[in-house]
Image 1 (cartoon, rainbow, N blue to C red):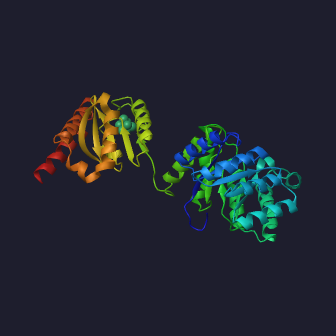
Image 2 (image 1 turned 30 degrees about the horizontal axis):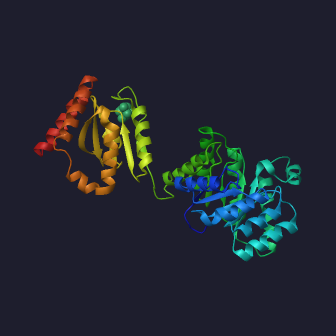
Amino acid sequence: MGGGAPITVQSMTTTKTADVDGTLAQVYALAGAGADIVRITCNEVEAAQGLAEIVPRSPVPIIADIHYQYRLALAAIEAGVQGLRLNPGNIRKEDQIKTVAREAKDRGLPIRVGVNAGSLDKDLLEKHGGPIPKALVESALIEIRYLEEVDFTDIKISVKHSNVGSMVESYRLLADTVDYPLHLGVTEAGPPPAGLIKSVAGIATLLNEGIGDTIRFSLTADPVEEAKAGRQLLEFLGLRERKGLDLIACPSCGRAEVDVIEVATRAQEVLEAENLPIQVAVMGCVVNGPGEAREADIGIAAGRGRGHLFIKGQVVRVVPEEEMVAALLEEARRLVEEGVEARLADADAGAADAAESDRLQLLEIKGDANRAEERRAAVAEVATGD
Ligand code: SF4
């Protein structure tokens, strides 16, 4: 982590750790949704026992989340976890922190110094008058000093705040002060969609400034949603390669020839289930649709009760409105199997003409005679080579 490695996505299980099968099922679901690392609470002896069974069967590295009892950190290390998260706000004794660090160092395990505005050390709260960015960073620096004093430097740091502005400011201050990898997150962001918006606002702002090495969305939702959102954010920012669907859909307007929201929602459902690494566009009309989605791998634009299906902006097929979603799915599978060149070579003769004719008719129906005339002239010019 850090030093130019890809930015990773984290999430945390919500099951009781002692429930080994239930926790493992969630770990697998999180990994499938895009989590590179999963954190699991180690809050009691039974949890540490559960970790000993979970870690060897997990598809991704497991981090034990430790609060209050340093002995549970030692038990988690014994259980074989790949890293620890310590909260400086509630494990405060220097000798205990150093004991954990020595054990972690012997096993080559990283420690995240996980500061949280909601559980900040009470002395720091009094000193700063509240969980302000300076207080969060000072808490991290105190813990880092303890770790460095025993030669422990495999450190990651987070300074999470539930207020987006304070979170951003805390991480900026931290990034100016230390050189360790940073774990980004807006803590207790709440349920989607507001929780998603807060998380994206904070995390994306920092990533765009080059700050951050791993991220977590802390949503009040199924953690699979966290993993999915984290992965998507990195893909949309171009920081990770696209692994799944990128659906582009127009917002619809008075020109729409179908119920765009319905078609796009159904298309998203069926295409997400296939998990194809593909960009798909769903556009409500043929007037602007193909042009707006030219960059997509595959798209469909509605026109006069039928869908014009296009690959990389070229119309290859025309389908009845009720078959639009099924056709998108079929073409997406075909495109992934055969590739763009082969699919374009097999385009339906006449599909492009049908789409053009629909476009002209729609322009005329909607009273845009000038644009229809311009299109006709442009097409004639291309056809005659003028
Ligand atoms: S693609 Fe057509 S229906 Fe969709 S927003 Fe654009 S003009 Fe409106």
